[in-house]
Amino acid sequence: MTTTPDPAFAGRSYPAGPAHTVSAAKIMEFAHATGATSPLHSDPEAARRAGHADVVAPPTFLVSLAQATEAQYIEDPAAGIDFRRVVHGEETFTLHRPVVAGDVLVPTLTVEAVRAAGGHSMITTRVDLADEAGTDVASVRSMLVVRGA
Amino acid sequence: MTATTPTPVDLADLVVGQELARTRHEITRDTLVRYAGASGDFNPIHYNDTVATEAGLPGVIAHGMLTMGTAVTGLLDAIADPTAVRAYTTRFTNPIPVPATGAAVLEVSAVVAAIDEAARTARVDLTAEFDGTKVLGRARATLALPGPDSAEARTGNDAA
Image (cartoon, rainbow over all chains, first blue to last red; front, side, top):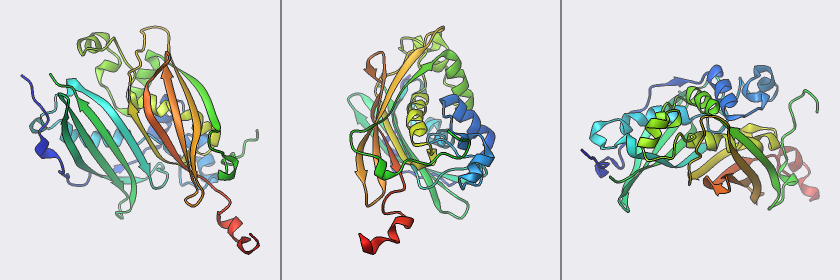
């Protein structure tokens, strides 16, 4: 029983949402787990002295929200992605401004490309994150390789 | 050092080719479990040897995103202001096997690759190796930094 990613998903955009509130506790936990030691990640007073509303997320923090958003595509049986054969190929974060605790972010998923290459498939997704007013905050682009059977 | 917020690096402090950081990071199974909890990535290839081996891997491997997140921390410490990072990209070229006991050591250097004075940004290239093998490819961080063209400096523009 093998499946291959359906190229018809390329170009598909999903409805925006649900809105996600960035948590100070998750920022601190993520910073600790990756060894990011700046007090801006853990000390609200230090963050406020530096001009931020609350503790600041490390550069790759949004991966969690991005991966949770990608799941509506990756885990869709119709997409034909065998997750046991998936490896991470590339990841790119673009941050238009710092992300801080208390931010309410609305993610929108787009499947940018589904390509076959040398027996493998390469899937590129983009998650755009906007605030509740619709202003762009960040985007996370991820390329996954689905190894051929 | 004082307890006040450190002053971020200024663009004028940087030159192309300058090494901003050289760090080594020990990655253990404990590190993987903490990262799984922090990130919500509970793929068992990052904690279960049987599952990892059945997937064709040498054993449990580190999350690529743990490697990416860890590799930038030396640079973040060097520039003192993590909010200067406006973009960060990498390819994942090789996995890091993490033994059941003991540590895998990730070695990272961060070198200034390009400076754009008009945009007030600097591109920093990261080299990340485990056991002499590159684990990240084309790993690049773009920093937005204060520079000679920032607001205070511009008031003296006529004299330039």
